[in-house]
Length: 339
Image 1 (cartoon, rainbow, N blue to C red):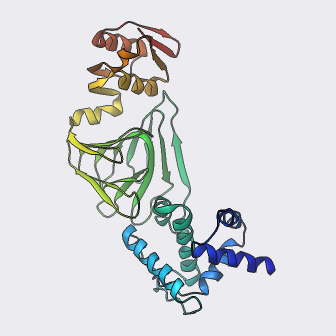
Image 2 (cartoon, rainbow, N blue to C red):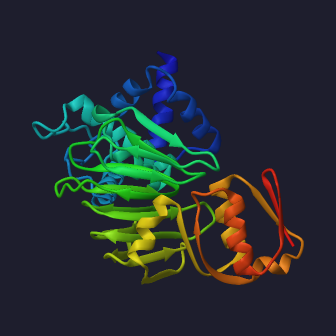
Image 3 (cartoon, one colour):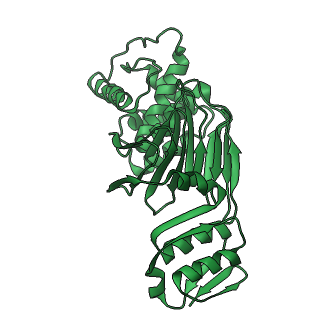
């Protein structure tokens, strides 16, 4: 009992965002214990939360509700009021558990953690599948709604075993081409870091490698791209077929793109327009799992335009690239030296 009282005092400090770094580490250990959920429930049951159980979990609305929750807790520390739960949404215990998890997410993980957690309430937790392609390998994935994903080399896709009743949400690291099954009642949402790409049914390509600008290129349909950095939503673009947006956390650039180029990527058709040789060989490193180096570093900065068909042996690719870029090269297993 003494230990539980100590845990509860720690949870109360956690709810009030008043934990020291050492206490935050203790909270992490506490959450691993089998009785952690019950202790959170009991602490939250001591206080009036001011939240109502609802299916609308829009991010700004949810943040506003939780802020009201904190304000009320600070004002009425000792007040005890029955929590009112809307019939048909959550049972009282489930609702309190959901509030506890949301509070933990905001204090420990920030907004992005909350975005990931709020999409699958406790009673809808599903097994998550992960497909990770090594360098030199691409794959085709069919999602639970029959949408197709052509996942690029060095890329990772995560998706649930089945989608929720309201949305179809997945996460991507790297690049992929999507052919999304149309469903106007269930938006299809791709999470790439803090950026969210939302569609109803369309085909498009996303490139989201760490350290590089994120790009979204649309072949068919309409795509909306938003940044959820911080507590505000920043609209980056609403794209139609033949449009592309590039975003690097500070700058947004929208431009036209050839629809056939967007579609052709999944078949290995790589189009470079005024790209540096380094940018081109970086792409080939992923597709072929090879390493390029330059005898003359300045050569890597030269810009060229070229069309490469990356479903043929590397030797053929290099013949085309060297003729276009006017250089000599040597291939040694998985290493290419450009002179």
